[in-house]
Length: 577
Image 1 (tube, rainbow, N blue to C red):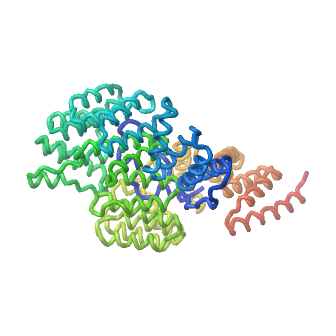
Image 2: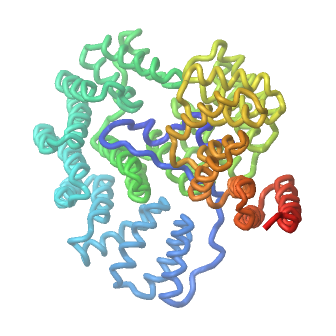
Image 3: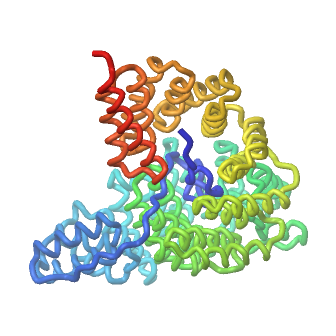
């Protein structure tokens, strides 16, 4: 079965992993596609009612409403530790950090042994107020918590650096000796040494990280180049930048460090104070937790990072991205709007704003942003390809093809990393009834990525539907199933191919498996019904067709299924017992 795979086909987004790829742990978080729906109830007069309403709001990822209900509950039960803990946490998630501080202070006083996140908030507040000794005290306690065994020492080191105790700060980092902790230690030792005016030591720590991570992430490149230049190693800075650009040819990164190399002027430090360093540490911690699929705590850390440094663009991008994942598109756009237009992250932020407007069914506004971005940078393709994706999702296939074509005009000769764009245009062309061009795009995508399961599936399925290249189509779809055995759509393709080839007995188990994997899909249920009918299992066939109808197929499919039910019943009545 063919599907659009819109998540796959979106331009590579500036997600958490793009900012911090490979620092300690790697795992992907999946973006939700929900339009914001505020909770349409207001705080009530009962503790239970407010608490349950807060839980409902949290389940809807509406932290603003949850905070209102929890505040109302706290007013009715001011000494309830559970409510205190949940309320300060939700307030931070919603960006109401100042309001969370007094509640966190009460929580630490009442539950000192269970107060890691609260202590972290109080430490950050102490840093903002210049109370570094108090912050250090909280952080040293925090470091004893297993949940903060990495982040606690790093933040403590920055507090010490802020107090002028560089050697002690570096000694604190040296306690992080295992794999992930050592990576963080080397990273922040580089930044601390650089800030302390120890360029050679900073470059040595940076080199340790680069030897461990052969493909450094964007933030490391951005900050590391400056470290190398200040250490008199400008060539290493240039190599770091150029190698990143080669691996990420669509990157808009234009670091000041390269201009500094050419002009002979040292670039300004981006980490100018210990407070900036703490914000970087929270960025790192949030990235790690995000990749561990712990989005609530990741957002908590990222919000605290912005509380320390509101203009840190990578943190703004991360908070916006985490809000998108929660379906909070309007809130995400407010965060993106705060990113300086001069920042290299600004184009990505504006792309994200456009995508979120599209999710909120504000396509015309999204298109205006994309048109502006496209005009501002005639060499860029992201805005055009994003617009094309939006048009394709709206089934405006001819318009989508035109937008993809405009993107390819800017590309010139496609490169291997353009396979996604070829695949996306191929889908739009196929749906626009231009099979000859679509087939060319699919074949070119496979030339670049011979074992790409989605392209194998789409092209193979299309050939079967056309009655062409059947043996090759079967081979391609079997390969796709081998690569993605738990993808119900691809498993359905194999079963349907076998059915269309007259091998119904062989098709049935594959289609049954596809229904197990995607029981909610009407097309897959319909396919299984057809296969059951062809092998004499008419009663089960009718059940699958009825199930398909209940799953609300499109009008054309509904009419076909209803016709099969009528004709099938007639055939069964005339059948020989």
